Length: 92
Image (cartoon, rainbow, N blue to C red; front, side, top):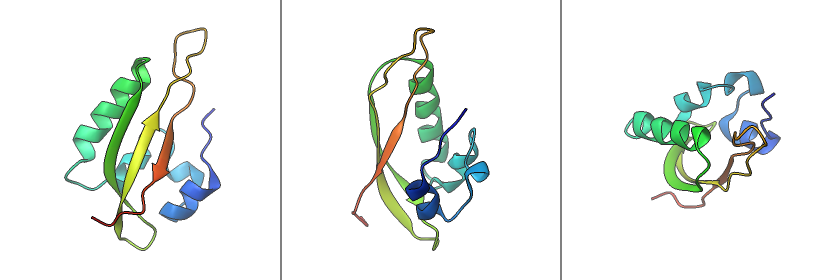
C-alpha cells in the first residue's frame, strides 16, 4: 500500500491516484525527469541514504525546488519502507 500525504497532494493539485507508482515523475521538470527517476529507482531498490534537489511543478504550473531525503528504514525483507520529500522555499 502506498501512502501520499495531503500536503504533497495540495502542492501538486492532484488526487492520490494521480501520483501512485511512477506517475509522480510527470511533475518533475523535463530537464531532470529521466535522471532523477532513475536515481529514485536505485534508492528504492537499495538501502543507502539519498539526498537530491530537483524542480517539481506546483499546482499553478510554476516549478519549485524540492529537496528529497531518504533515510531508508529497511523492513525485514530488505525493502525500503519510507521516502520523504521536503519542499524548498527557493525559486532559483
